[in-house]
Image 1 (cartoon, rainbow, N blue to C red):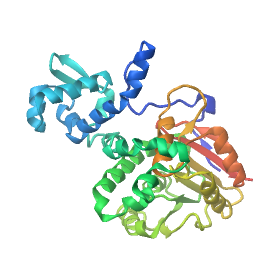
Image 2: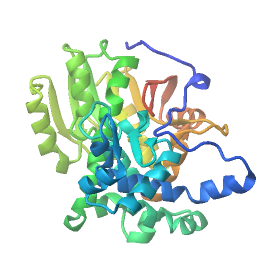
Image 3: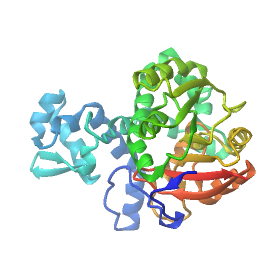
Image 4: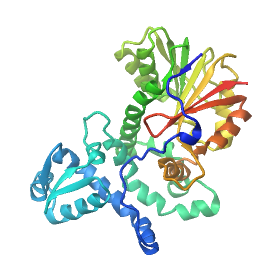
Length: 360
């Protein structure tokens, strides 16, 4: 039985911001212009990250001319990029043409604890601009944008050799998100009561390996597709967990490994529409122990007008893979249909919450 260390009701779950944003617009016209031009701020952010501008600024302040020399850029054009990032609260000016990073901007430095540089490079990647320019067709037809534009599902496209550079950006971003979220999960939820934890769709097992290090009596299984298993096994061995953790071949729409008293999935359910997600959850329900727990790490939306990064990521899911972010009630209905009762929604110090469910 898991013990909740930090628990809040859903109504008190905060909506964490992924980056600082511009000040609220003051007139109706300004609201429209700020929203309509937001893609420009995203492009400026992507440009700065790819040019390693945050790394070059570092912990201090730096003059634009020196930054331009170090980054191989035009000083006037760079200044204009930084001016937009100043409005977005990524940098702040210390002199006429000198800037330092804000707290949000510091998270764009690579190699520091909590860095979001890889995550932001993917979120603001030009691939998104191309895809979202075709969003109208998806809304009209109710079809996944990526499939319509590229003629195949996103993950198929990403696996092709000619798209390996984009795949690297994506995979680095997923690693970045895991590194940001895992410490928050371990702080918020106590896994010490479980004997065998199965991470379904766990990639290279970063989450499960962290859980096992924190809980030395537990055993674990990373369940993944065959193409991933070689790297997963290597990661487990390098982490000195081979005696307590295994990697098992798994197509989770067909079956998942049996024998776990805790099944964990991080950012998996949101990739799928309700029909596919229901099949996956039912497969887990068929093998989970009667007193077991299902723990999902997902964004949890509300129906208020309050900002929440999950409301934007919901469009990302619609455009890229045909999935969706969900509200508490939507998760509750989905889980109930699969034979689970949602017991708690637990906030964490990350953009994701933990949803704990038990088999009914």
